[in-house]
Structure formats: C-alpha cells, structure tokens
Length: 506
Ligand code: ADP
Ligand code: MG
Image 1: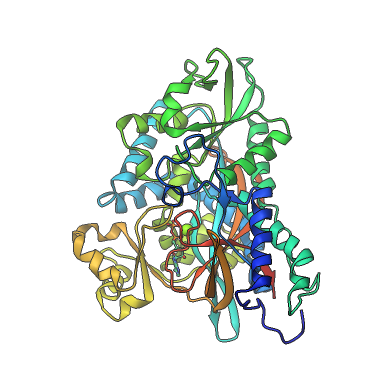
Image 2: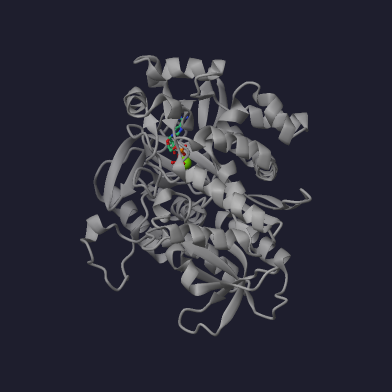
C-alpha cells in the first residue's frame, strides 16, 4: 500500500472495477461463497430443479478493523462460552426472566412449557452443546476504542461456513488483484488474520459426537442438521457438513417440519433418537447430536405438531445444539439483566473470577428493562417515549434472525401499539455508533459504494454437563465480519441488509 493512499480505495466505475468484480463473482461460485437466489430475482418457481446459486453479497476489500478490538473479542470468547454454559444450568434464573417476558411473548412462554414437560418426564441426556456467536461493534470513546456487544447468539449462529470462505476470497484478492490496481496494494501489505470458522464449528460438533459414544443399540451414529425448508443460506451449512464428513462422520439434513415423520424414539428409559433414511426407512442411524438451524422463531412452529417435534428432540438421548434452556439463555432479556445494575454481581454469580468477569463487563453497553416497577425500568420508559431521547436507542423483543427490532423514532410508535403491561417483553439498548469506514459492496452484481458499518462476530463452541457443571470442551472458533451501508439499521446478511466481509487489522 502506498503510504498515504486511502484504504480501502474508492474505485471509479471502469475496467479495473469490472475486473475485480468479475474475479469475485467467479471465485465465489468456484469456492461456495454462495446462496440460493431469492424468488424476487429469478421469479417464483423458476428454479424447480434447485440448480441455481448466486454470489453471496460481499465487500470488494476487507474492511479496516482495530487490531486491539479484534484480539480482545477473540480472547474473551471462552469466557463468554463459560458464562452462557453456566446460565444454561441455572434453571431458576432463566425461569424468573421467562416469567417477566412471557406475558407479552407467547413464543418464549411455549418454549418454557416444553422444557417443563420434558423435565417432568426426566431429561435423559446431560450433555449440552453450544455453537455460539458473540456480536460486537467498535465504540469510540475519545481516543479509546472498545468493543461493545450487540447480542449473544445461542441458537443457529450462522455464517461460519461462508465467513471462512470470505477470508479466503480476500486473501486471494490481496495476492492476485489488489497489486494490479492503478494505486496498487502490494502483496502482504494487508494484515489478514486466518479464519477457521467452518472447521472450528465442525470441531465443536465433532467433540459432542465423540462424547456421545457408540450406540448401545448397535446402530451407526450420526449428526442431524435440522433445517428450514427452502433454506437459501444452504451452502453456509454445507461447509460445516463437508468438514464433518471429511472426518467420516455421517451427517444428514432434515427439515424441521419432517422430523416427526423420519425419526422415532427407542423405548424409555433410553429414548435414543433414531433417524430413518427417507428413501430406505429400515436403515436406521442413532442421532448423537442434533444441530438446530431451524426452530429459533415462531415461523418454524406453524402447527401444534411442530412443538411435538421440538419436544421429541428435547426428550431424547441426543445431544441437542442447543437445548431449550440454552436457547432461552440467548434471550435479549438475559443480556439486559447482566448489563443492568446490579449487573456486576449477577455476572459474578456465574463467573466468580474477577479478572474474567471484568473483561466481560467492559464489553457491555447500557441496556434497560422496560418494567414499571424498577428504577431502571421507569427511567427506560421515559427515554423510550421521549421524542428526542428515543433517537439514541434500539428496542428489541426476544427474537432472533433479524428484522424484529425498533429503532429510534419507531420506538414510541411501537409502544403505543402494545399494552403497557407487556412493555417488559422488550429491552431498550443504547445504539453503538462505530467509527465510519468506506467500502464497496458487490450485491447481486451491482456495486454500492460509501460509508459502511462493521459488526464483528466471534464464534465459540462449548460442551458441558448440565448435571455436574463440568465443561468438557471450550474453544474460540473463528470470526465473522458483517458490513452494512451506514444508512441501514439492520445488519443481517440473510435478511438482505448486510454483506459478508473480513478484517484487515489496523
Ligand atoms: P437479531 O437477533 O435479530 O440478529 P440483533 O440484536 O443482532 O438482533 O440486532 C440486529 C441488528 O441491529 C444488528 O446486527 C445491528 O446491525 C443492529 N443493532 C442491534 N443492536 C444495536 C446497537 N445497540 N447499536 C447499534 N446497532 C445495533
Ligand atoms: Mg444479530
């Protein structure tokens, strides 16, 4: 990089941009940095054979990201894994928070109900697996840069497959294309850290698979991916599957809606989850690990039988990723309670080591409850309904998957529509405003140039025993950088707002 040239460069439309775009388009398809096309692009039912794939949206250049922040986020991940494993074990704590939000949130109430039913039957599997992702934005406080947590994901944490490919794409471009630009960036001028997210997440699944051990019913064992029908982000998941299959672990994909049809339970007290190959039902695999890439939101539960499917997983001997308790540990309400006074003491209950818990505490930003009785809740009600104050906040329900939040002026509007006694099913969070970065996004063949906002996700894998509390596996598992235009409030790639990116450490 010539010393004073701005990075990333703002390219004019022309031959060099065309060349760079073409390389990205071809490399992406050749290496599975791809998604299935949205119906809006190809027309409804225009791909009946399921043969089409398009480029995942991606930045032309890896975005500059502060090295100290990146390293802090990576270093802290195993502490976060431990924290959420401990929260998952604290049924009393989770139950209390569920009661606070359940009045205005049928979905959370229903998840809790299923948990209680399974508890009554008796859980037969004590091992629990988390494939987590902690998301951050950089907060600038004077000269000091500090990562602040956006949210902690405990179910269906996605993009680990595509993220590793995005890092490889940018590494490829830094060797082959950036040195050829009119203002060249020499090879090795960018600090591009390795990203093992796909293999590291697979390693977490493998650890659980191995801990499950052989079938005492003499079936072969497998890992079952529970997916959504018509999933467009399928290649992201496939990268994890291929990694597992490389180490000779049988992996199958089953839409959540078909779980009851193609699985059975062995008789109690064992209750093994048995998967019957749809094309040959007499061939049976015992499901050692059930990895949910579905079931995180109400849309996946259209009928009462959908809840029976979730109950079958929970009640069986399979190791679920995640259990209902771990899914509930990912409620925004949990994040709020950890961050609201007396937050440090709540945190210390789960993580007694002071150094570890203060490192976690530093990554929290202000989050408020919206109840009518606590001082923090009353203050939040004032902030959320004040036309000026509300502009500094985002209001979140207990939902995952993007597109559910209310920003700034939309907060008082939304509160008007909700009975006051249900306001507490939301949390109010201070908006983090990261330093502006310039980049160019390539989305569906079109270039979008301008200010962007970057969100770093760090993956973690954790396997623990719910009964004894013993942690058997606890690893940091690579990263994700998602980038969106600075005019956009939501950042989800799958929801159509953000794009894939990787870090150039500065
Ligand atoms: P979801 O579970 O739907 O992914 P998030 O809490 O991650 O919900 O919010 C979705 C998006 O909204 C984030 O990816 C981020 O772009 C934006 N966002 C959420 N919280 C904040 C915040 N405190 N400050 C700035 N942006 C935020
Ligand atoms: Mg999110």
